[in-house]
Image 1 (tube, rainbow, N blue to C red):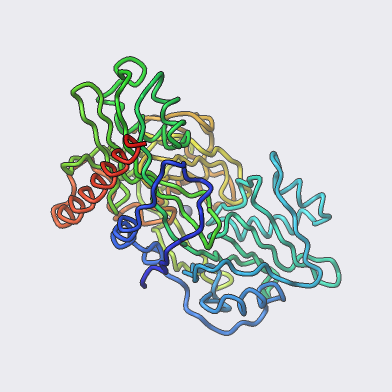
Image 2: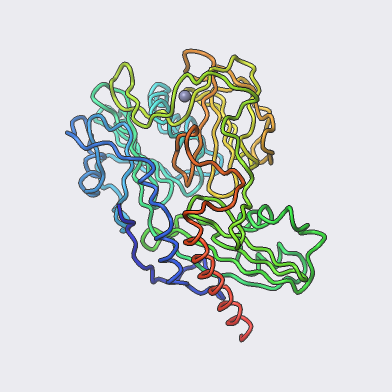
Length: 448
Ligand SMILES: [Zn+2]
């Protein structure tokens, strides 16, 4: 499926005034970047019984959205115009505030615990409702008896999730995805004071700065070794759907010149960082996040059928038959971003790794880490268990690449090896493009 790409011409508020749009590069990046819809396939379309007004409305407004009686889960790549908000009678919109939880919102809205449990059951394989942030909102669709029939979670302009009641009374979910456009900008600066201050001044976010630190941390001590006058160049991409920034952003390339040292890092389309020669900057991943091997009791299966309802209920991870109390290890270094308790997924941990990787560990007996904590590859992060809705003790392990779940047992995981030979030329070409961009931007800035 070709990426729905068009140039974005509005003035971008997020961009630093020195930043220049690099349109040629943007095209190069999009060509090289895989379409996420290739990773997660959509369910086949079918009849649409049991859909209530909100679902209907959305289905009619978004012709590419595939729905069906069996479509418990689907991903769609939609055109880049923001879909109009559903104009449905009786719909209620709620803007999420800091500190909100689903249970608080539901009780304030007058919905029952049972309805919340049903929604959370539908959200079990996504876990989208566990982290509600200001800026997200919920739209509810009620029937004449004030019973919840559908709910939409708006995460950003490119990511919404629709939960709707099916004929059997249970809820299903659908992801409404629009991958939008990535707009790249080049940010350059000279260090005066700390790297952090100078980078902030050049327009880098805290997350960007953390990424740069992490990429070069083996070769440079940022607090000790950096000299005044050192220069840096960064190519960053920000995601837009229509004119709206989704808040998704990633570093595509960095160069840092400090004394006689020159450091570089470039993001490849496999989600990993390499230096300008194609040597890996990524830490290796463990294939199995356990100290020894356990039997696989259930495989990754995006089309798994629920044994009772017969509907598709994806299994987004691999299950290992670990007895309760088995140490669970971080698959790679990263930062703990979630430690949550879910009625179905149980106690679980999510780790954000560098590059475009994320891992999840479900049904734990106990977590040994806190959100915000840095962890090393192989570090004990918890003990496996049988929490949540399970038939027996096991570890459910998920690997996400570019925000889509992939099969952890056969996905290409980072092995800290040089760039694969078959994509080396494309990588070097792209690096040359980016360096040219960086040099041009540096010249422009120096002329000012
Ligand atoms: Zn599982």
